[in-house]
Image (cartoon, rainbow, N blue to C red):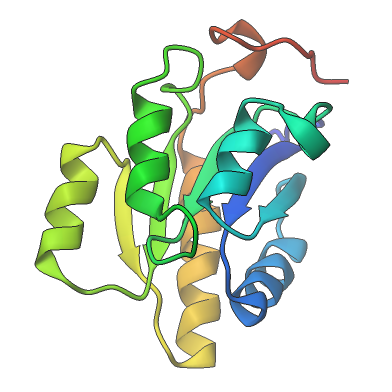
Length: 157
């Protein structure tokens, strides 16, 4: 297997500091070079993606891990904005949330989420789920080359 020397850029949109830490720890042991950028809510996520305010030098992520239940702007609003933006819509979005509500699952897929995963409350299971996300999205899936995607302004080094 050829390992990509360029890091996979991951945007983690999560308001729970414990889940952020666990996710970062799970990805730290990855066989695939990756960089996690973390924001606390949907407003910050959109600023990051549109390179506004404190995020003017942000990279365009290769994949987004998105919680649904957050303050200020929830994940469904972020999902809708991203998937309706021609410069961002190719970025795969993995919903990683504690919500098991069928209406959230259906709404997420209607808004073009790429997958929907429930966050387990058990620590060991949570780490297993994050590892499975990593294995699939960083090792199996062919992600669009962001430098060729519409709106990609920076090149990977």
